[in-house]
Amino acid sequence: MTNQELLSIKNLSVVYNTTRGRLIAIDNFSLGLSEGEIISVVGESGSGKSTLGYAILRILPPNGKIVNGEIHFNGINIIQLSEKELRELRGKKISMIFQDPMTSLDPLMRIGDQIVETILEHEKMDKEEAWNIGANLLESLRIDSERMYDFPHQLSGGMRQRIVIALAIVLNPKVVIADEPTTGLDVIVQYQILDLLKRLRDERKISIIFITHDLGLAYDISDRIAVMYAGKLVELAEKNKLFDRPLHPYTQGLLKSIPELSIDSKNLVSIPGYPPDMVTPPRGCRFHPRCPIAMSLCRQKEPKLIEVEKNHYVRCFRSGEVAFK
Amino acid sequence: MNSGKKLSLHGMLQAISRVKIRRPITEEEWFITIGGSIIFLIFMMALLAPFISPYDPTIKTGASYQPPSWEHLMGTDKFGRDMFSRIIWGGRIPLVIGLVATIFSFAIGVPLGLLSGYFGGNFDRILSLVMDSIYSFPGLVLAIALAALLGSSVVNITVAIAVIYVPTFFRVVRGQVLSIKEELYVTAAISIGAKRRTIIARYIFPNTIPSIAIVFSLSIADAILTEAGLSFLGLGPVVPPVPDWAYDLQKWYGLAVSQGYWWLAFWPGFFIMLTVLGYSLFGEGLNEILNPMLREV
Image (tube, rainbow over all chains, first blue to last red):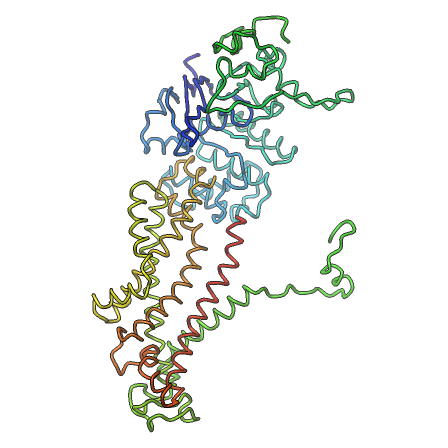
């Protein structure tokens, strides 16, 4: 991967210690993000996609641990930073938008106070100045700045998510990790949020890691799409390439399972089976128990991530075969 | 208001009468109102004692053992002192000790609970052990021991009572912190680079206040009872002839029973009961109102 990457993740592995044993949430994951790029990380629940966001900011829960790998931001290895250096990084260089706008705002703090609090944590200025920055930011996100005086419960879900986004970008970070930011919002609001994120990328050159389980949203917003399965990166490509010529059977299954709004499509296609238990993942390729084209080699050996064509990576033994689409 | 066929009784009544029916006052609102009023009135009584008490409570103002009359509303005691004046003045010490002791407990228990709950680990384990051992003593027994150890002055009794309620605050706050620190908004605050101090003081502490308020009110009620208990056992902070409800109660209850001088024991006991009732109602009312809200938020 190239040198001008803003954020590069190399061979990252994250493990959770659970009562049932070690759960490998992310296994040997690599990904690079360029300036102004939007990458979607797509996968089912439990595929490790949210853990990825938490790992980058080093805010994993206490039982979670990065056991291997490097995360470089602008040449600094985030894994080696001290708590104090991390605090300076968080919010100011990399920030995160959380899944649930209903619970990611402090219910007892006014919107304005939360924004001011965030600014003052990083910048030396007086409260009034910070308040004005917040008000201007809200206006630029097309939110009435009078909302600064409101408490979270006074706002609608879409409005709250825009506040959460405002909090994430108020310090002009370079990278924003958006962890399913549109979950629980209706479709129209979902697209407003996507448009907002795209605008932020265009206007502020913010790079975005967009974590989602919805391939439709991923296609709409991103430049490249990374597909994760059971903690592994299984396919990575530019979005049109991934949609036109998906090479991993899991990606193909995901694409087939997008419901179509046409008259003759009556059946909703789904991938049979369930995601594997990550404490005892299957041997060989992790997808083989659910794979329609698995062969005996897949049960024995783990395939490597290979670049089948330029900038199109896939982790499958049979990706080279033409027959398989 | 309801679409469809389901009509509520409320809606029907409104439709028929075309008068807006007011929401009835709920039980917990009664609790808070009555409790709050009792506390307020008793505090005003103690505060305005110099202006409203008809006699000096420490000197002889009439014949001994007079039953209640217009001259002496609550009768007189053995030394001919006016019981009404003694009741008015006698609230000062229990009220102040209850409040100050609880403030002390709050000031020690809350920060320790915050730190213990937030940082966890061995610090939390040791602190919890200490607090649980204090908590496992019956409050009055511990207060007696401390009062005997320190000697009974107003300050010492306050300290002894304060010690008893530190674990109550500690446990409630610690428990709250354990759940609040898992909230997404705390993770969100960490993710934007907030310092630990900011997270504890600005994000976690305010969210524990509803629970603290309840404990605060109930602890004052309990502290007043403990003070009364100490006085009753002769370990009280008061030196006669300073008026104090519990002191008068323990001084005269024997006579009240044997001689039928009921007013000597009835009024001090009644006012202790009333004060404790006020705080308890207030605390219970707060509990009823704030706890569903805690669940909701």
